[in-house]
Image (tube, rainbow, N blue to C red):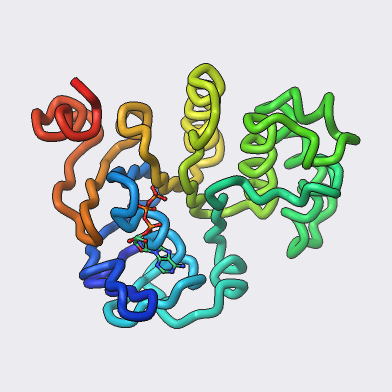
Length: 235
Ligand code: ATP
């Protein structure tokens, strides 16, 4: 569904991605793990056109999207939940969700999707008239995921969904991510420092070090790989 081939990205003269090859198949959950500064977020931002690739190609369902504008990429069905959530702090929960459906005209289906995200995260329904900025970190992450779902994405890109959250909330969020994948057949690409949960949730995983992919395998195999255990799982 999504294919990155030999992708190179620069910030000025910092060579952040050094020839990334990566594939995300339809209906899969793929996790990209790696240390701070490895280039995980840059991989996501390059995929959605926010930081342009200088070399290489990115395909979505066979279409070359390498030089497409970010808003056109969103229209194709690729939606990112950015690191740090970035919800609209002065809008209510319901208004944030409405913003996620901004590009849609199908009112009946939008109503269904409100019901769906409220069924995933009942706390958001309880808080629907509360402004986003006053939600807890976990609730904001739930809202950011839900807002992305309101665009009915074909691929959901999640940047560090666990960042700054209590372990119990992180577990809940990962279990909902798996549910979204199962319920809606949404393809999911997760970038995450919490390697344990990210690999447990994933069909396949990629490991990234200083701008390059160093290992790829099934989530299951990576979890028992001795090098991964030492470097990323603290075992
Ligand atoms: P983290 O888990 O800490 O978010 P990451 O794996 O997502 O790290 P990136 O944020 O993609 O890593 O950063 C990759 C490299 O690019 C790092 O060396 C970083 O300092 C650099 N970088 C990222 N954003 C910028 C920027 N806007 N300007 C200059 N350099 C940047």
